[in-house]
Image (cartoon, rainbow, N blue to C red; front, side, top):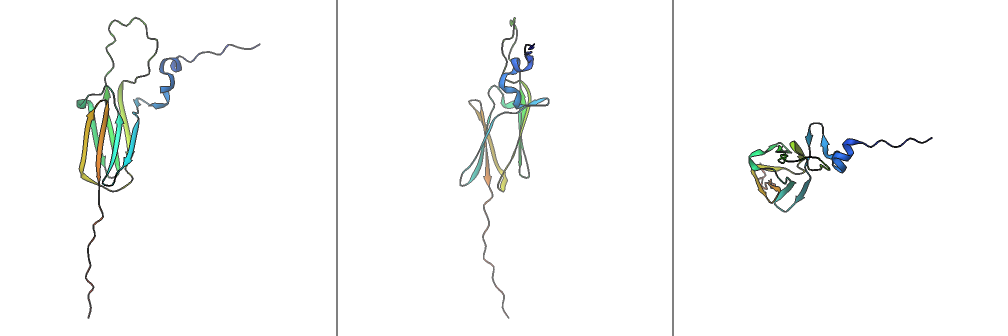
Length: 132
């Protein structure tokens, strides 16, 4: 006798999004590219306001954290599907090359946070050889 498969209420509620939930925080999607002069990190943060964002760099780890406030639920009678995470988030990205920590900029527009990290260029110098 076969048993009917029980549905998973969390899978029904969160859909394919559950793999992006880590404990009590969610993780936004990130692209990391390298140009000749910089590492550019693009973070998908639709609905997050700049005052709810924090960007820090510690050695070679970039950390983007903050909170996305929940949508206004007034007037909602029944929830059918919920895939857009709300609440606190955090994403850490290891920067693959040395960077100038003073040369970091961040810009939020159209639901994307773009962080540019200027690469540390190698310093070349001539060394005079001493002789007797």
